[in-house]
Length: 346
Image 1 (cartoon, rainbow, N blue to C red):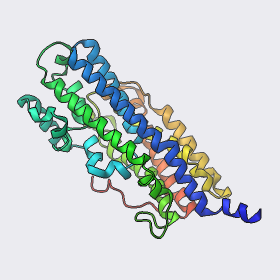
Image 2 (cartoon, rainbow, N blue to C red):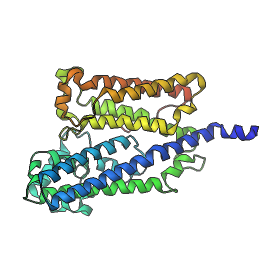
Image 3 (spheres, rainbow, N blue to C red):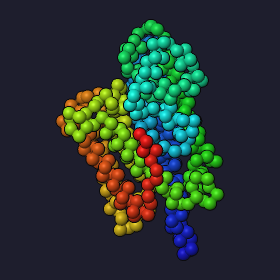
């Protein structure tokens, strides 16, 4: 019995169990939700193209927000099938500091590029033309109101191809994580012959990095991209999803996803008893972040004009607190270090 207990509580088994909980409790269901939202949006746009009306346009716009929320929840997972076939950038090409994507989408709409309405051909085009940014412009950008009345079918046909492209990628990612011979099995079973994770610490560090780099993305790339040190420095039109009013929805979903992953993985159970305060502090900050900003679909200009700029500065401060808790306190307690960030070049 003593031997059995020692095996069940060994660091290796605990690390493997943590990874398995992360996969089954967050990664797989979150990607499944993304696929469901993508399929719903494709159906909405298809219905809109078949019978243009203000009501059907509103439905497609509303479910676009749901799609953004579903993607923003799981986009902190930046390894595995989402990195294959350049899917990460194809789903969301952002930041687009030079407006390259916008120009390409506008050019396709102006020139009625027939190849962009063909799903197979669209998938081989510029990443900026085939993801959420492109679909947002189709549904919310200049000229989008024309989708609510009968007329030229091109814009809707292009939007349908983009929506279908996103749905197809979501389906492929779901299938990739369900494959027992794929990333899920590789990540949860480190060993000397494993091509990606040779040790338990390497597998655990992959999970740990989701929080470290996810917080970095939310704060340094997303928030700091438009939120200035004071109101005079704010740049609302540089905010992600500003056209659809989904900026705050996306930011909130980023942290909500990390909160769910933290809870589902039971990562806190690996902490020594004298470091329990770290897990308590992390939970407190995650819970506070959800109250800091509203999740209404609101133009970012209105959010920034609200008292305390809609809670965004406080929300940013919380991400910094969480970064220290994960990157310094928890890392030290677990003997881990964060790996290279794919965001370093942004």
